Length: 210
Image (cartoon, one colour):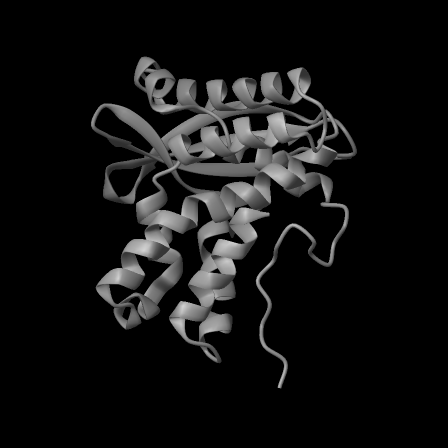
């Protein structure tokens, strides 16, 4: 029986679609110091996009310098602990104390490694912050539109933002209504339906190290 595969840096699709590339621009960007300086979720998201574009313009595609900078930015921009627990879903209860600790240590580097690599094909797309509205749990949904590059029509992207200790953090990103969190949770769930948690953790560690 074929095991479900987690996407890594040598995944099936050698070229990420333009929508995904635009999404990644919004996914990886602004550290806690800058976030604290942004007094609204809209300002935070706007700075996120600009900061990433600056990194992409100042580094070579697929270079080690670009990847390290984007990885570091990602770890600071997202509430990685909340995201890691959510995508593990009901399988969180299967983890022992040591497994939970290792998983939470590896998860940020795992996701950052994937996204930083896919930025290699960034095609110059741009985004615009449109508006913000309250979301459940005291969070804010920032609505944006992505255009340019290979896009014939603007693409709607919603970014859910929370505030923790005075700094904004990204919780989820939806492209045309498709949630990053839900997609990753489904992927992990499919793998864990046939494999043990320690196998998942080791798989994530190998991807993160590439």
